[in-house]
Image 1 (spheres, rainbow, N blue to C red):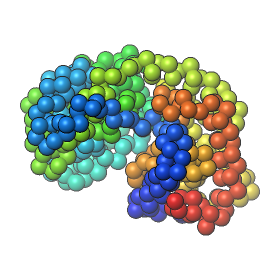
Image 2 (cartoon, rainbow, N blue to C red; image 1 turned 180 degrees about the horizontal axis):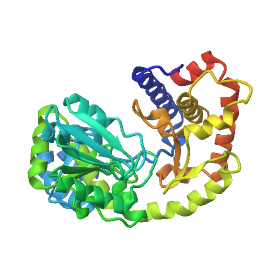
Image 3 (cartoon, one colour; image 1 turned 30 degrees about the vertical axis):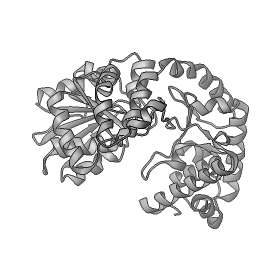
Length: 387
């Protein structure tokens, strides 16, 4: 094993960020190709800069945040957080008592770790399902969380979505929709309604996923619930600060769904080229992805067992893509517990900086290098943890 704990994942991320910093310093930001789909942006205007203060900022930006946030998500009132994970934590702290239960439904397991971790922190039990047949709130259930789109862009069917909300409300249970990327994927590409329009009590989205905003969370919902959650957010410093709020507003104002739509043709072409190279490469709504299982199949040998796990193999692949080809993917830079699937998102702004042939060559070279080093622990450790 070369990744033994979440602490090792922190070290892996630090190594990736140090490398990125060195490249930006030496060759400039344009030397990187962030295809993660999570690059976001910070499109504040010059006039915003004088208002990024502790009190003047929130006062000035409040009206615009409410206006733009409700247009994007629906609902009665919005609240900005420093992370989507912070919004989930604040919600569970506000609405779930110790000893009660959180149920999570998502299109495909596993869940994002922020949800079970928040439940555990509050002393609540936790269950998760990816089959509508098994979903059933209990007497102790006080919150149902629905993930509209998974970390690997699996989308929940509309019928299942509506059934879960209906079943939960029949049991008197509030529903939070974790629509991190789904607030745009579901609505733009799948023509699904906004979560609030389907009757959810709360919805939260990530303002850096498939839109040009900062890494932050934006929640909308019923006014009374938002006020309860805001109370917890302020107690624990989970709320977004003025610079982040300004970035969220400008990103919402400039959000262009056509960018997501245009990515479909590009991803189809890239997929047709990559499937000749990697068996089982899959399409996502806005790009392509290679799961840890598929990478494992590409590098394993019939006669020899690999000394590392599937997750470690995929993480190594992501780090090789970064350090040899300056391609940023989620397994290299993500937080502990992040998916090991390598996703190349054609809706990313940086996708325009690479030709399909460059991406194919980078995947080819990275797989070749991966096959050579997987039996050399020292080389694997250097790739993961040295900057």
